[in-house]
Image (cartoon, rainbow, N blue to C red; front, side, top):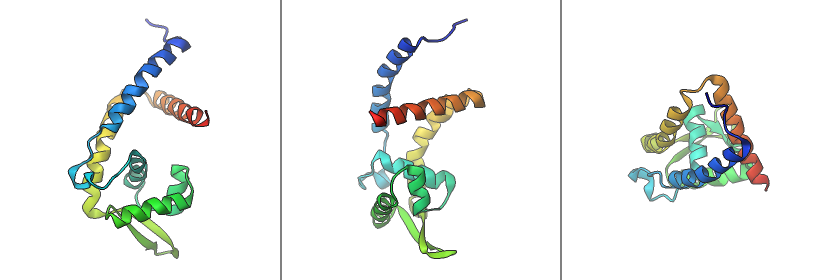
Length: 149
């Protein structure tokens, strides 16, 4: 039975793996219905929150995406003009906007997201909940560390 990887072996493996992973992610096929809309990987995160968490306010999206509400407002405005998102007044507070994926665009957005979701499911499903948590925490820490350097 293997006792696992040493830190240096793990670093070497990840340094070789990450560029391949990023390259493959960049080549994910955008469905033809939305291919000409100049969508970027940053839009995937916004779509994922709306798909998994349902309609959200701009401030909620900003907090989850870890950007300013102004940044989210610009993204939402752009995607609303392109017909991918719908923005409606919050029935409880008319000053706030609630953002959703436009119904007619939902199948295309779902198809785009499902490519990554399917791969993540295959990678994470065999793990125990504790192993999944450790993996997600490790990946999150890597993202924080790389963004600080």
